[in-house]
Image (tube, rainbow over all chains, first blue to last red; front, side):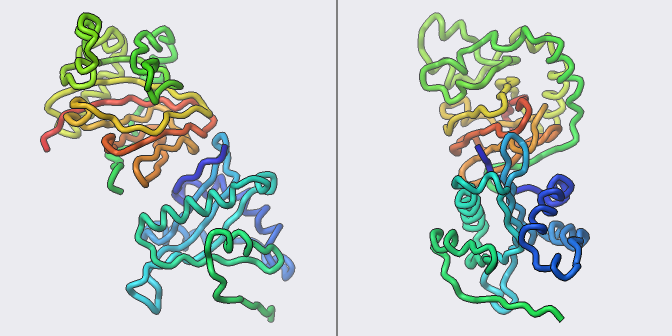
Length: 150
Length: 186
């Protein structure tokens, strides 16, 4: 059984680090360019302090097996539109066969609705395509992001 | 949050935990709350510190004497656990309580749950409900309405028990809460 809850970055970061390393190793394009994982912890702490950081943590028997990190704030171009912008999400490899991802997203949606968020955006990697999940959850594709390493 | 309010943290719960460890015989001496037909608390163990006088119920068979009666009496565990009494009285002072109702210590093992329910009856409406978390670890989920929190060791919470609530202990440890009903000046 996996249960989801909002947790505080400062409480959970140390426990989360091993999963962040696995997450980075699996999906990051930065590692292919010798850019190490080195989160700007002070920025996350500041966003936790100003209330714009949302961390959803999924646990099984107390152990973290999934997480979603996002930012909740008015849109920079749309002051009246409280917006949830994506940072990262991850489900541990051995927990991907069930409904954990869908259940986590549903928990997030419920929480965002509770907070009065109007627009929720999520990204999907080309090499790790989660777009089927988002289509299932009634998201609409609106943008493709490109990157060029210089 | 509308349904939860954390009113304190950093409470020293260790003296009471030690006392509970030394008195395992106190658990489940009274099982009415956890065994009646429709109870959502089937998977819970209790220590009653203060509760309704069950003599009335046993004499009349009238459940309203438990559900609606405001007056609680002290059970032997209240005298056996001075560490709990101190916490309860500190809480009374903190929230400016004017009447003390039921006081229970509850235990929910890892992987167990309390089914969704609303605390009904006159007693629940009359008192405010507080939880002193004696042992609570990440994964111990408490949902009330559309809000979910994790109550962690040493924290004290008020919550609105008139709203549907449920608990899932998905942590690796027992969930131990001291539940205190207090009438406050509203």
